[in-house]
View 1 (cartoon, rainbow, N blue to C red):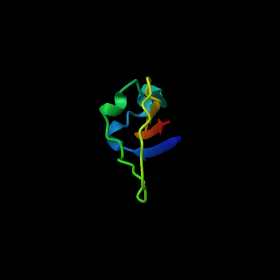
View 2: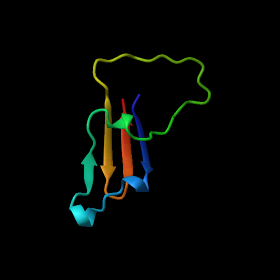
View 3: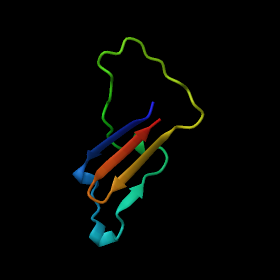
View 4: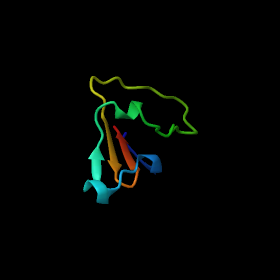
Length: 72
C-alpha cells in the first residue's frame, strides 16, 4: 500500500523570499517530532503490520508550511 497525505501547518512556514528555499526534505525520524494525522480505515475487519528493516517514509516541508508525508 502506498499512502500519501498532505496538510498545512502555518507554524512551520519559513518564508521562501527570506531564505530562497522553496522545499525541504525532512530527515529520518522527523515524523516523530511533528504532528501527523491519525489515519485509519473505518470498516477494517482485520489488520496486520509488515515489519521491515528500514522505514519506507518520506516527509517534505514547503516554505508555506505545507507538509507532504508518504508511507509505503
